[in-house]
Length: 354
Image 1 (cartoon, rainbow, N blue to C red):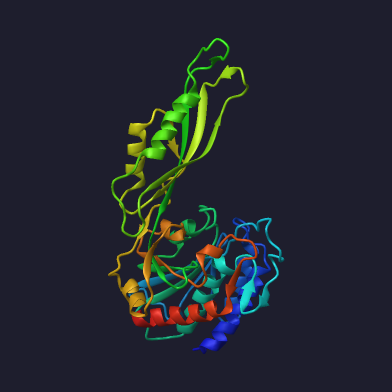
Image 2: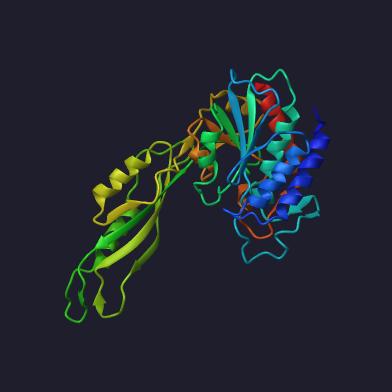
């Protein structure tokens, strides 16, 4: 069993290596190899499917329940505001700068360190399964969703994302609606046709004013925002169609199907959901995993941001070092102490269960 200082040193080394690798969503192959080599050098057998890597504790027992420790390998692309090289791991003033350092490299390497801490234990009450997955940033189908059928039975999970090591027990789901208002084209000068823009405007007004009655104590209300709109080909033609897109963030009080039914009943435009996959996730505050976090003084809350937790059909909480407010920002960084504390708290949390 390795001392926590050694685990911390190894975690920082690996995170610096990952920062230097281009691992945009769908392009995680080299990052996968780095994870595989890191584990294999420690005599740990790894498994890989597409750009996902996983492994289990040495004395895995099929008769025990399994806890999944999961975070993602992929990053968004760096924005134009960077003043530092996003692919150079720069350590200064107690911070580690670099793309993916905060979201979610710090969580990934901290969860791996906690997994290594327990890896050789013979007396664990649960199995531990560590998985580094792909395509989280785009909610892609080749990430955790494709991996879950390969993992066998999972009973509950810790999803590593920057939460300041507090416990996100709920997060809003995402439902994107593509809407098309159908009118009738005509000549603008003669006032012919039925203007699809006017039909769409009425529908947009409904989205702006309607409120779903069930409000979550953790996540607040369902929100619906029209974020894109397009119509018309030239100034003198009444448009026969107008398309617009609605971003819906769904609390745990409603299913996607329920939201869609209400929308269809109230607008004239044709509505097509892009996906019904990204559900609102919720784990009870009374769950043994959450109770262990509360015992350690961690706060629980509802998160407005989406993660791979949305694709998991079993109880899962979201927890990790770093701050969500730094995600996807220029000159992304994580404090080195956040990683050290993250490893320590993950180990304490799992100790409460194992």
